[in-house]
Image (cartoon, rainbow, N blue to C red):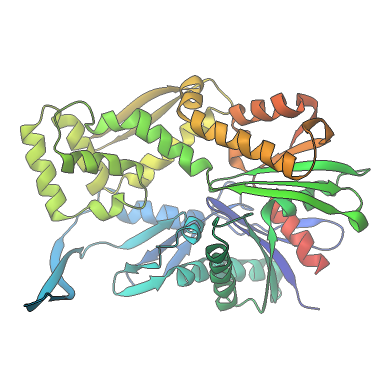
Amino acid sequence: MTLRVGIDFGTSNSGVAAYDGRSVHLLPVDPHSAMPGVIKTILYITRDQRPYVGQEAVELYYRQNVNRLRRFVKKWAGEIDVRGSDMHYVHDVYTFVDELSPGRLLQYIKTALRSPGYQGTQIFDRYYTLGEIITLYLHELKRRAEDLLHEKIGGVVLGRPVQFHSDPELDRRAEETLRQAALEAGFAQVSFELEPVAAALDYEQGLARPQTSMIFDFGGGTLDITIMRLGDPAHRQVYASRGLGIAGSDFDRAIIEKRLLTHFGLGRASLSPELQELVHAVADWSALPDLSTPPVRLRLEKAILESGAPARLKALQALIFNDLAFSFYNAVETAKINLSSQGVAVIGLKEKDLDLWELYTRRQFETDIMEHRQAVEQLVLEAVAAAGLEPPQVDAVVKTGGSSNIPAFGALLEGLFGAERVRSSDAFSSVTAGLAIRAMQG
């Protein structure tokens, strides 16, 4: 019999599990982590093209990059053929390359599946397609899982959101990219299950009688809702599924845009449009690493001398050129997580030329994400209506995913369905467990 596992390839975290028909075994695929059964969806590729994943990738990135030396060289990147009605010329294109860069850190890999314009990226001397990036990550998960199980894995059930994209063709293309990446990673059989349905299968294991349940799966990249009849596998039924492309990473961005950009000069001095654009880029994880070029450094150094906020622009310079972006985003995310259990948190980061300290309250956070909260409420009500139900007819609302622990959304669900019906499952492993159950069922 071919061994099959479930893999939750998540936006922020991933996991691998196997089911033996009686219990689910969450595999400790990240021994470097405080939670070995949960591995960060992070890939670090070194200059010699060696891939590292999870906490090992994070630790190696910190060791090799923070406050390191840089040396930029100008390299020819190609040429542009320019043709007009009465002219034709070839224009050479050059780029600045940091020849001391030891590696490239890739985060939010799954989110790229929802971006139709993203095809891949250049990492040193090699271009990686999105599919190849995902393959590297899944291959390492497979290798680690096989080492733990002492057996070759032939098949996998991968989780997927209710929708990668609202356009059906783009949605199909994203799933196919993920399928091909899994095949290239060495899985002979690849199938999919909706992530909220997988969480429902895990929750069902503890039911003594049938019930109508809403799975509220709110993670780092998407909100997925499924309403199902559970508790009797022979008559299991999906009433409705809905998805929304907002989640934890959007909340991090809202915090940065609304509370932290002043620490880097916005609103504190008269900045040129180019510098304002540079400050606004702080909120974009994917854009910030590409800004560390000699022209940007010169522009900042000139502005530091001429503007009325030299310390703040120097902090911006340190953030970009000392490879502090990952530390900065971690500080924001940590504060957001802390606000789930306390009323106030500090967003802090102290490094060379950067001393960030911002007191941030839960009330401020809830104000900053109010627009997202309204979109979530609308999606919940749409899902209930699509199922042909009224809120009182939903027996249980099951929360899973890291963002489901945010108090504002717990209060939202309790207000709509009643506090006695809202339950919590394991925020980081219920989808993985359900995918393993689906893998065993075939």
